[in-house]
Image (tube, rainbow, N blue to C red; front, side):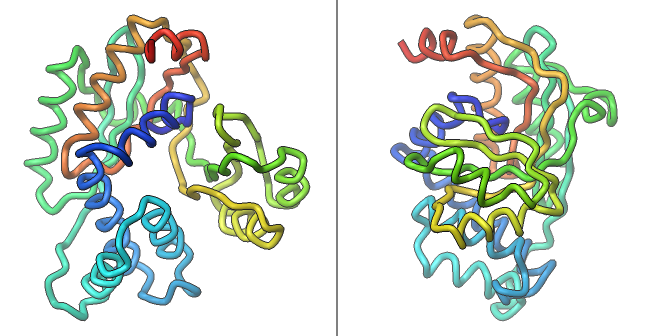
Length: 249
């Protein structure tokens, strides 16, 4: 679940330690293939590929898998799938807005699987544009624990930084998408480690969820993210530290 609440951090750790790791790796590898096909196999000349590979390595994807994905994306292995990006819109329990980003080689399959996962978990699908209007594309950089907020700001202040917030174990930097590569490079130049740098959809109309709503929405998002074609799920749900603590208890 993007939006980088404390729950997103907790769920990331869970994914690294259970059976969801294989699915996460498959999604990261698919991103590498698509980035290579779109912008070429040179990491220095293709920042989208650089960020996809960096994120894969941060999630312990083996180098052999990464190299094969780049070769498939470049056509060197001759077996690259033709993936299409699709965005689905919907509402979760209590009217929480959701955007579902897919990379698929079969649109009919994706549409059916997404609809089933949403409706079975108390949500409804929505018409194109009815949800997405409240989301804007943002560069989102997750900085690992140990970094100093002032040092992050000093390193990136010239790169259209809009917000720096704590996610409980580090910081989340939000900036204009066109400045994300420069902001990420500035962090690296100043010796500041980061977990990931992605262009995401961030809502301008956050809804504070109580424990019951948060539990239902998280269950729905887990079901959606478990689908092979789903790359990311974005929501306008906000979870307070108190609600998160009650869920983890």
